[in-house]
Amino acid sequence: MTKPTTKLAVLAAALVLSAGTALAQDLLPLPPVKQSGSVSYVSGGVPDEQLPAIQQARASYPLVIELYQKAGAKSEYTSDAQIRLKNRKGEVVLDDKSDGPFFLVRTPPGTYEVEATLNGKALTQRAVAVPAKGSRRVVFVFPQATD
Image (cartoon, rainbow, N blue to C red; front, side, top):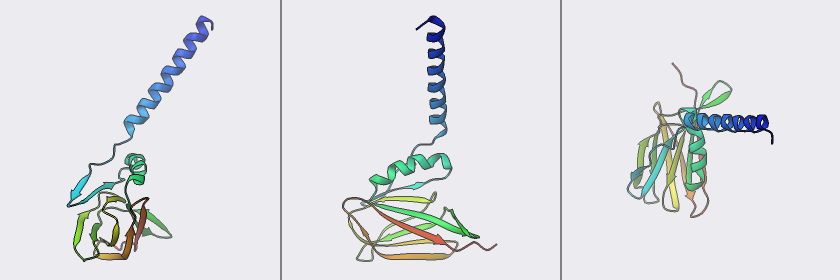
């Protein structure tokens, strides 16, 4: 390589590295893991810069709860829903408010009832089988808010 070509290559590499660093600084890490007895969980996805961390972590949680609310003909992400998880005996093993549209739960394998409540409207999915391997996705779509 000639000297001008070498300088150009070094400059290009520096620009690529600085762009990657700037992008990485704009992304947010996974929210802190919370604990409720034998259940650990993470909730987040707001702001959007947190989504890549949530998406990457999904595979390591056997139960993934997604929260949406109708907005006209579409559904949009929502947060602040109260999430309650009951085991087969009816015991509440998790009861907390969502910090975003994603609620990732690591719980022992088994069958659970999952309830999400937003603005007084409770939605329930019974007999949710949480596998020993892989993951189960539960989606709640709340009705459109009325103001």
